[in-house]
Image (spheres, rainbow, N blue to C red):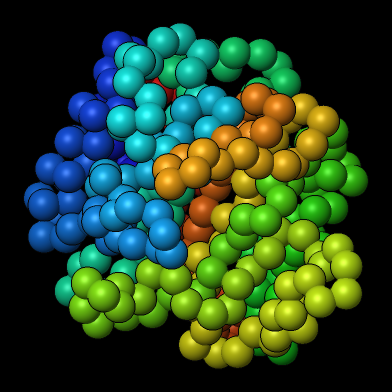
Length: 259
């Protein structure tokens, strides 16, 4: 697994460019390649890195060019790796802290983000609507803890790689981390899980007073609008007759603290 190998590499003083280059080497060593590099969405430019590397208040889609400072103690790094291997796609993300948690609150933030994902996955069983996942995640993050889910971002279906123009990376259904907030919000909420469904589910959690985001025009990184610290954890899940099967199993064993 690419995440297991990158945590052994991560050290203080590294730049995101160095970390991204190491991820590229790890993928090549596994006869795989990045599903993100040069990926296009809407009017955004082709994604410029092998992985999404998002530091502190950057929620997701961070790039080496957007954050050039070396890693220091207390930095929180979210690593999201998308892979193409033998015609299949994988997409998994995890959050790491360099040397120490910057505060007890950030330690709790990361714990809650992981727990919300674990609990949400239990709801991805045949016949259950996707809203059950969102209710479980929101209950953990916003009702039982003083954190906020990032608004407007969520998980997604995925499939097999077809071509660079159809990588199978983002397909229906959209999987929100919170129930619909108004009529017409998240139409897929009532979609029921079916055997064979593949989804990448990914709570994105923030401290602070809001889950609103800021994205600079024509740039990939998404930031918490109020500058709050964020965490992100993502699993690939296959719905089976016996219930959800986590294809990215083992991520829970990865260390929170690296470097």
